[in-house]
Each structure stands twice: as structure tokens, then as C-alpha cells.
Length: 415
Ligand code: HEC
Ligand SMILES: [Cu+2]
Image 1 (cartoon, protein in one colour):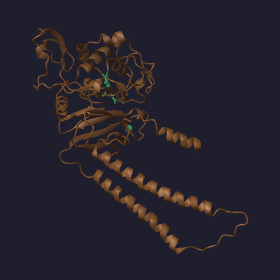
Image 2 (cartoon, helix red, strand yellow; image 1 turned 60 degrees about the horizontal axis):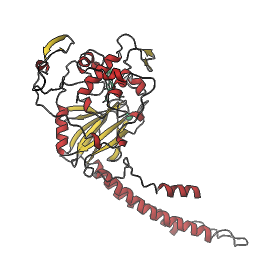
Image 3 (cartoon, rainbow, N blue to C red; image 1 turned 30 degrees about the vertical axis):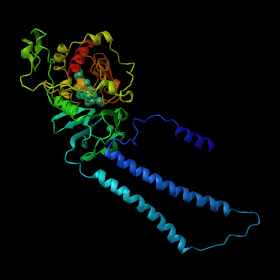
Image 4 (cartoon, rainbow, N blue to C red; image 1 turned 60 degrees about the vertical axis):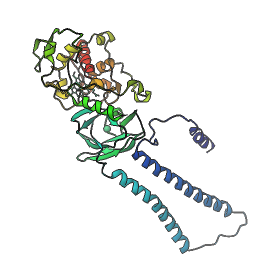
């Protein structure tokens, strides 16, 4: 008892900050939950103290003493029975009224000005759609600070659960059903948060994470407008500085042709948009993944550095990738099984928040996703790599390190 109590008391002294705590007053939703919790703790503590005091008093006062009298034998006591039935009933009413009120508030329809975000859980990653802006992204959510956000939660396969602990209570994603969760991040300012899946959903459940960013209304607008625009490849260059060069480009079906750079731009005219990402220097360390690369996957730094985005575009557009991934603006890439990669270069993480999004991790991921993330539905694609699910070694059609580096450079150029 002494050790346990001492440890408890010492634990309360740590004084650290808890960035993933659910008790931060960051949104209307978690303020409601915290108010309820505090109220329960307050009344619960009073009830506990009174009950324990009476209990201890009775134990000591009426304890057995040598030569003491035989206790009086009673058969029921109507007054006491009514009391100990009514008292807990009253306590339950005390608890139920604020609880039900909070439930009704959190279950109410979202305010009309809410940003709509559709969340679709997949084994083992998150799809985020912004229907009002017409784009789909993965594993990273941006929210305008101070405006309600309404999440419509669905799953493509098994049960998952959506939770950003520091922002709002979790809610399940249930097959054949849409659940809703809304809250207003009104006390966060510009900030980054961790989110995760909280319903066991298979091999990589623990690797099914995501990131959430609250940003100013203007920055959100800049971000959303750019995300809604198609990927432009090659990235726009300053034409005044670079003379129009003739470079090999490739059309949708992969036929190489020589065209001037100016003509290689997509045929659909779109207003130029500025890529915008949450300021990197403001991302706190606990939001950046630190997962080590498994020793069984390797690709030399020099090979990665030699990657060429233009060649990568051609290789990507002819590889298995296009059957599972979509890149708006690359008409050959229309797959829907995996994450939308239209602006993948503007994300901080890949593979559902498991790895940072840089050339090194991206290249290792493309080489052997299943060694990087157990159970991943993206198969092993590197030549000579072992696929732990199919239990085969990839040979024909496998990507060489050079091709992987090229694709990596292409994907990272898609800001
Ligand atoms: C069989 C379908 C399939 C194929 C083929 C495939 N992928 Fe994937 N890819 C996925 C799935 C599913 C995920 C999500 C995996 C996860 O996080 O668990 C994914 C994830 C990714 C990611 C991380 C995206 C993010 O936001 O986290 C990248 C990048 C990627 N794939 C690139 C490629 C490239 C490049 C190729 C071709 C060389 C390719 N993929 C081939 C299905 C596929
Ligand atoms: Cu899950």
C-alpha cells in the first residue's frame, strides 16, 4: 500500500506536458467532456469520502471486543432499505442529467458553417475527402482554426475508430453506416496533432495513424485550393530564367516523344495555385514519426540521390502503381485501391503516419512496402525483394533501385 500510494503521488509530480492528452481545452467537444469529467470527479470524490468515513467509523466503533455482547439480530430495516435505494438513485440522477446533456450536444447535427470532411478507414490507412473542394487526400487533415469541422466516418472494410486525442473524443467507423463527429478547434492556433485508429483492425492496426493540422482560415484556403488543383508535372519553372528546352516527355500510354517543355504542360487550363504546407519548423517532435527502417530493406543513398523526376514520371506511368493510385493530372494513374497521390509531395508522412515523407523513406517504401509495414496491401515491388505475404521473391517486372529512385523524385515533385 505504501509503495503504491508513494508511486501515485510521485507520478503526479512529473510536471511534464502531455501533448496527446484528452484534457486540453482545445475544442468545444473536449471542453464539454472535460467539464463532465471534472464534475463527476468532484461529486464522486465527495461520495467516496463520505462512504469510506462511515465505513471506517463503523468498522472501528463496532469491532469485536473480547467479552463484548452478542450483536443484536435484526430482520430488515425499512427505513435503511429505502435510504440506500433512494440515495444511489439520486446520485445517478445527478450524474445522468449532465451526461445526457453532453451526449445530446455532441450528437447534435453539426453547425451549418462546418467544413465537411469525409473519413474512410482502410486497412491500414486513412482516406480524407473534402467534398466542398472536390479533392481527396490521405493520412493528413487540415482544418481552419475557429470553424466547426464535421467528420462523416465510414469504413471500406472492417471496424476502425477515429481519434485525435488532443482535439475530441473518438468515434467508431462501422460497416454500412455513417457516423458523425464534429467539433470546433477554437483554442489551438496554428498547431499539429497526432491521430490514430483505436479499434483493433488487423495486422497493422498499431500503424494506422494520421496527422491533423489547425491553420488560419487564409492558409486553409490556400492549402485547399492547391489540393483541389491537378498535379502539374513537370513542376512549373520560371520561364524567364530557363530557356525552352527540348526534353523527352511521355504521353498517357507511355510513348516517348520529343516536345518542347512549354507544350508538355497539361492541356486542361487551370489557374495557378501555390503549394502550401503547414510550416515545417512548427511541427513538434512528437508529431514526427521516428520509426526505424527495417534492416531487411536497403537502397543506397547515392542511388536515391541520382533519381530523376522526368524518368520517374515515365516509369511510374507504366508501372503497377497506376492500378492502385490516383494522380489527378496524370491520366494513366486512375487507381482507387491506395491513397490518392496527387499532392503526395506536400505531406509530412507516408504509410499512414508511419514514416517521414522524404526521399529515403519513400524509396524504401516503394522497394518493399510489406517489409516496411506488416500486412500492407501494397505489394513488394523491388526487384529481388522478398514479399512476406505472397512468400515469393520479386523477379520479372520488379523495379530496379534506379527506377525506384526516379519514381521517388517524381512523387516528391508533386507538391
Ligand atoms: C496493389 C495496389 C498497390 C500498388 C500496385 C501500389 N500501391 Fe502504393 N499503396 C497501396 C496501398 C493500399 C497503400 C496504403 C498502404 C498503407 O499505408 O498501409 C499504398 C501506399 C503508398 C504510398 C504512401 C502514400 C501515403 O500517403 O501514405 C506511396 C507513396 C505509394 N503507395 C506509392 C506507390 C508506387 C510508387 C507504386 C508503384 C511502384 C505503388 N504505390 C504501387 C496500394 C498499392
Ligand atoms: Cu483501424
